[in-house]
Length: 378
Image 1: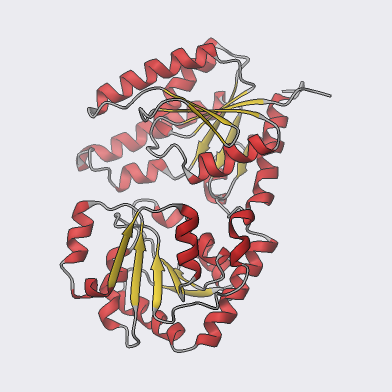
Image 2 (image 1 turned 180 degrees about the vertical axis):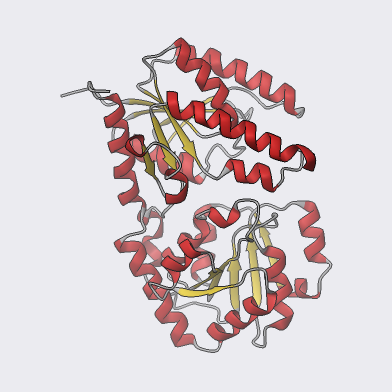
């Protein structure tokens, strides 16, 4: 019997070492399946072993962007040169140059690039640290860099079908952030303790994800309603929302443990995911959409075509013009006025998660990719 593969995941950008996609889904699933798994991070919290994953810390990042990139990349290369993993699976587009260099030095190394978002589109749409007149140039430069990656890296993992389609078909898979059903075993049917006025949004106070439009919708809702918000906050977004009349109907919980948050989602009547059609967010496939559905509650979601195919096809909620608070308010009223519809759509949502949109199905694709690129024919 062959030895289990040694897989090394790498991120120096994600500040949460227990990131849902990287740690909770990919790394821990690999460890449970018998692989040797290491995760390289750069958060200054030290090394540890958790759920079978060996976490190695490169040290806390510098505040200055240039110093941060130079220091973390230097430390990363030193660490990579010590490791003898079968697959090096990295998650940050900023690390493409590092792994192009690494691949030249160690041609036998198998490198996988995990693309969480359309980064080129985000550069065009605007990063706070890039002056507007330079964004097109940054986007063009990144596209050229990605072309080099397509020639040299061994595998590509896209967070959506659309992202994966931009990479070589024979070496690319889509790996959606679908729920791990074990985390949702207590939420297999609508809650008997559901609060009829409670609606939930788990994206925090962050740009482009629609929290301002959701809160602007609240004064237009005719039924009693209370919006519970979970997640981190960007001060300027929070302050803008706090100055509106709708904010008096908001309860902000901050960042909480995932399983605790899911228990509160389960008690809610509606889950909202109203990304705005800008900055690449219209191409995303957000965790929260599937988390709501796995918790047996209906969703109100942006009317992006790839979201509509899921929500409308399974009658799991309502899609709306997410830029229009009145359209969001109308959808909230439609559901709050009909508890039986809330129950029915919640059950439909859970059923399609159990049958199709779950992590077990996705993880099998990741295993096949690893074995494909490490086989003797590679």
